[in-house]
Amino acid sequence: MKVGLTFGVFDYFHYGHLKLFERCKSYCDYLIVAVQKSEEINKTKPDAKILYTTKQRIEMVSAIKFVDKAIEYTSVEDDIAKIDFDIFILGGDQNHCGFVNAINWCKENNKDIIRLERTEGICSSNLKRSLI
Figure 1 (tube, rainbow, N blue to C red):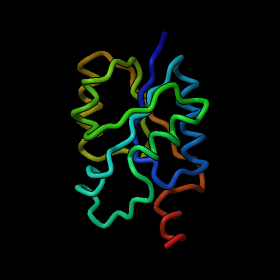
Figure 2: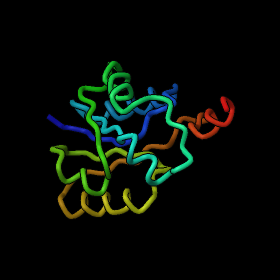
Figure 3: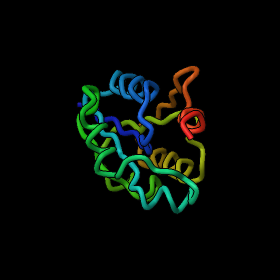
């Protein structure tokens, strides 16, 4: 059984997130989605207006039929080594140093890596701006 893993905030949940999970699931038998803790979001983005608590975001993500398990995470580069998985699936825009370090860890530990392009025309940042 192939286990896939993807990371994200998933606060302003939208169609692009749904399509991400659907595409992730097409690469694995079991999909784990790691949802970033609210307090960690505020450390890297102090001006972020978080709509839902970590618990609420995990509940929403867990309700998606493509997701087998949703968990919380603090830091992608630290937490990736604590999770049992085979395939690291990430978006094309996930390029900050934490993801770069996570990719390097995957390469060193013989994990498959799959990059997916975002759903065309959908962006969380644009949605936030249109709502504020």
